[in-house]
Image (tube, rainbow, N blue to C red; front, side, top):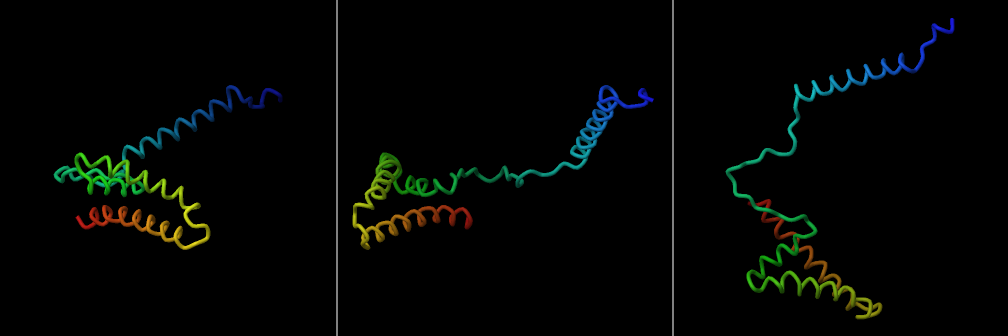
Length: 124
């Protein structure tokens, strides 16, 4: 009666491996028979216009306003000035309205410079 018991190796292991291989084969067959489209179809006739991620769109717009030899101002000087101004805000006016006004102006500039390329990309 002890010999009637199934042992893990090789009895159960062979059954488990058979089920695993059949499952992989079925999944592979279904994937090859019914392929899914990934992403959107590409129109190769339209010109490629790269766009950065949304959090870099304001820098992308600044580069468009300062082309050529002025690019250093749009890509280094103005962003550095904005960051330094944000760091200076706590000492600008403690509890007053100047700091809030400067922060809101910087936020409005960021949102405006981010929205302009987005609007242009949607309107064509």
